[in-house]
Length: 288
View 1 (tube, rainbow, N blue to C red):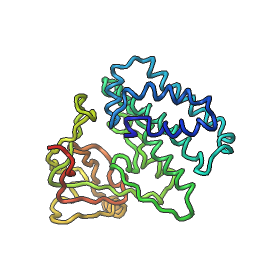
View 2 (cartoon, rainbow, N blue to C red):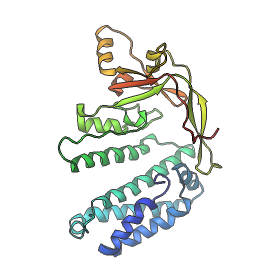
View 3 (cartoon, rainbow, N blue to C red):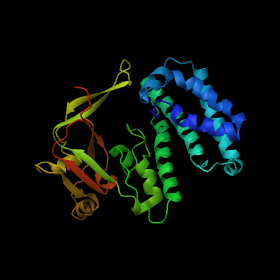
View 4 (cartoon, rainbow, N blue to C red):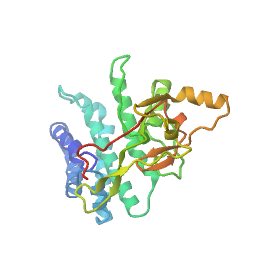
């Protein structure tokens, strides 16, 4: 729900501010008042709603969140001293989550209106990376994390500025910060069915997930490496394969599958390992 609604993060903030900074509640109330009527179960619902929402209330929402975030930033020492046993630690992160969600919703609405700004989608990637890095900072030495995300989010490589994906995905930011300690492993498949995301303003979630046949591997794709490997999941060490290919002057795969299409990506640079399943099926709750 958090992608389509600001309430899950702003309601705990309101409860906290009621005891330590009641004057700041006006910013929370403004944000909830404007965002509540357009909220939905995914980011697509408010994105479609924003197409019919005047610019003025959208700007009021963004301003309220910016002022709230500024309040937490400017008064962090004061608010820290006022924390209760369960702490204030997550409240600034909650406010940043709300501000990030607002920017993401606006970016999605602009894309639906035919004026996409791919760089605007970097807000989500930056938030995902920063919150994980903050978690590691707060954790004990040697803490290890298994992070599950879409290949497009975990990839180490950056994307072309004119491409369909955010230029600096979460994985690129984590790789910059963690170096070799960040180990992205892609998951793909070569048979069966996959899911196609179809924007649909009439759907309760703003989009449909339609089952679709997994396309045949493109000749220059990483999936083509696994063609003819039947029966069982297969894993390739992308680092070793990249070194071998460059040592012998062999062509490297330049595409990987994204749902039902193939997009340009230097797969052997983007991931340290790649797992390919010979057959996939949509989850049981995918409508047919």
